[in-house]
Image (cartoon, rainbow, N blue to C red; front, side):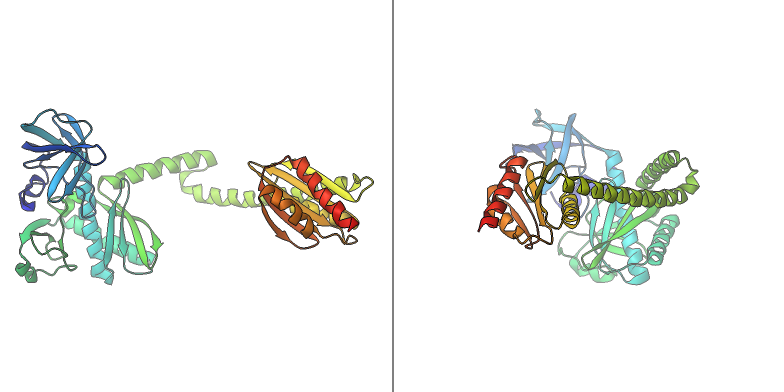
Amino acid sequence: MALHERFYYQDAYQKEFTAEVLRQAEDENGRPYVVLSNTAFYPTGGGQPHDTGALQGIAVVDVEEVDGEIHHYLAESLQESGQVEGAIDWERRFDHMQQHAGQHILTASFVELFGFPTVSFHLGKELVSIDLEVEEVTEEQLRAAERLANDILLDNRPIETKWVTEEELDQYALRKQLAVTDEIRLVIIPDFDYNGCGGTHPKSTGEVGLISILGTEKQKRKTRVHFVCGGRVLKQLQKKNVELREASQLLSAPEDGVSEAIAKLQASHHVLEKSLEDAKETLLAVEAKELASSKEETAVIKAAFTNRTIQELQKLARLIAQEDECAIVFLVAKNDTKLQFVAARGSAVSISMKQVAADVLPLLNGKGGGSDAFVQGGGDRTMLADELLEAMERSCNKSSTN
């Protein structure tokens, strides 16, 4: 079946068709598919996703071109072997037509105004994107390209398709070089854009409806532009209105005052965060004094905790060591499947905390580091927290007798 003979190229608006079943089979993953004498189902290609719909009432879930054949993948095997009735999901098809045509127009707008070529195109379920071969695009450039694109829509210019030979290409000012040399299909917006394309498009630019650029992101040395066209613009507007209304209600602020209310909330949040940090520091200082005062005959102060960060253990151990220059501090926390510890010494103690860590880390299959005065580490929960504290104290006692 030649490319130009397929129903979706003869008439992109054809929703139903009749065709003969030429072959039924399954792919390597066991998915049933059929090959037809002709089809209105567009296969994935050129950045445009495949159509969906039904054959004899059975859902068509995927469509691919494989070695020149169009495979219609079905939700279940087709029983008929003769003539079948097909129907495409028109809402999905027309959405793809709007997005694809809108991409052509926006791409041409960036070239027309700034000479920024598009190097790739992606048509997603909610958003569409193009990658521009330029590292930075300003907000003013984005809005200018968006305005020009929408002006082309308002002009309601025809969108023409034409099959040409390689020899005929010189007659057209193509936007970019073509990779194909036979069965060349051009999509033309007169006096604006000439481009080789195998996708489906509406008959005029007005049917695209509207083009809205939503934002950009850096993509290596390129700029990715996210946008929507046609019915997707309305969906995005509705979605944003719902979000704005809910935010307005949560903030008890009018919709046009949401940003101001958020700024006040952030300022208040920062104050609360600072107050919370100050309170935590005060509590740690009190806890350090209590632990320091709990020291009995030996110089060792030890404690086990559950779900406590290594940062808190570090602060607590340093505060205790500052409180008591003769103290040796061992703190352990069990967090999920890990045991973490810190070991610190007061300024009057000479025992190496690095040696303590070296003795206990193999017991945990762990890693750690630090200095003779202060170390931290952690590893697997191969023992109880109290058992780890005992092992650290044994190491300390061994060092003190050597």
